[in-house]
Image (tube, each protein chain N blue to C red):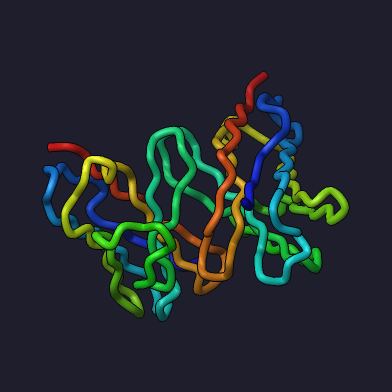
Length: 107
Length: 118
């Protein structure tokens, strides 16, 4: 199985801050990675697919980058509705595997 | 508008079989553009992919479940189902059905909390 190591596991930030979350894969996965946002009591929502492509309706303050084994999700200016838990998912090989999650909290 | 909706018993006894169905509306499960997956999340924990099925009926499972899981497709009802047998308390979780557009999960059901308890 491909292990996805996500960091940090949590972070406290203020409105307007730039946020960077990293996911590292235990082996190369090309660009086969997505980023998901989950709010309490809700299903996850995909933000980014194929490492850097924004899903429809996702604000442009979200961006993704990386390839191979290291990937980054960036929120350029955090908004109140962005406080949530974020997960990466690799779909390069089965079984599909998620990172452990990053909880973004209010400072 | 495409929607997915989980249904099934919310309480299952240990050693018995957990059964959930995902009803799909707005698109046919016979579409060759998608896989249909199940994902679960224990309370306060991360996400685990359980398996998926294609329109052909071919299914693939997460080996971590050690052959306890079966996913099936009902084309006439436009739904797909999950069965997880020999459940224990460790299987208590929110179970999500999701559509896989081959670059991840682009659409999710709202989730069904299933508790395993006697």
